[in-house]
Length: 503
Image (cartoon, rainbow, N blue to C red; front, side, top):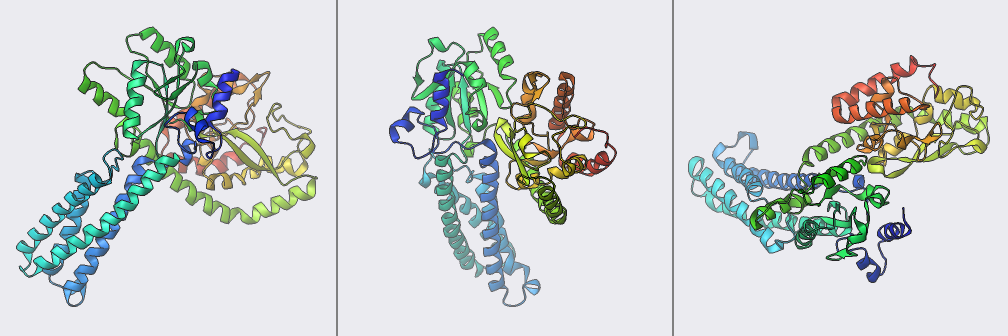
């Protein structure tokens, strides 16, 4: 990386309480803190959370009102007494979705948002009054009206809180997607202008393969360097999407950019420029105008990531409880066997090329520890202690990584995290296969598809690296909860039947 690019990277990743002048140099959309992608809130998940809070409140209010109207045991009450409140609650829930009350569009303003909430409760009132006239008596009209007014007030308070939370999360960089543009073009300028208006996306910077012709900034967003600077930039773990804004008529240039960027784990999007103001606006909205900063194509990813996270938390907690006695015994054995710390910490590649610190029980002599894996383990390696040989053969040394799972840095199942700078032969492993970084498109795991298919332990040749990468990519393409559970179940038999593997 050139000195200017390195300085830009350092500036972008400096502390959040830097002076205002320095913050302005980093661009008008740079959030207070640059958080890695795994640490930020999914837009769809946040909307579903707000929706669940509304549903819980509406059902509670309907239950309380139905109990009061039943004048006796609820299960023995007349249907006409309780149905209007239940119908009004479901009408409100449906109306909130119909009027898109979970968009939290900052450009619309709080009053506009509360107008959507009020429109939703107009639907609730119609539904509740219709149930009164069909199943109850006119005397219930006043009770339903009071319920609608009370529910509107309480739900409005909840939405004001949600509005404020969303605004804070976006300002802090916890929700707004981070993107960078490749191409200092009129397309990039138009997208940046739209992003500044909507506040729905953060454009962290612009890169251009013709950097010598590019301006220093576009609408205040800095031009951080050429494509080579992007490929090695420290900002990449915080970037959700790379958008190529070069005009599509330059087909050769676009193909060259796609080929160079395909080695990154970040999602790459080609912006298709179109003629005409309205059509162009629609195209721009696909990147900047969606509700709650939701980018097209991310819904399935967010849903899959949420399910996988829940699975990881459940399995990690259960595993820690069951393995606690074993972990205590291993820790004591490591401490008594050789001088040095019980745990070995190593910086490894995580999701989206984020650098994470992975924990293991120490299996080597402390004075021979190799944090960068420049020398991979071989049979009869003289650096490994007596206890270390046993815990490596049984993979008990990996158990502390359950703590990495709880911290959200790793998953139970995923590509194994490799040490930064790990070498295969005389070359760095990450440079032996063009698709190597693709294995970082998902969180690394304690076990994985490659491990149960024979690719375990060190990789000594380029062919070994290539096979592991292909297996990891196959897992990423096929990942599902069912496959994850199958890999977990197959891990122990594979360990017991693979004692000859060097680990």
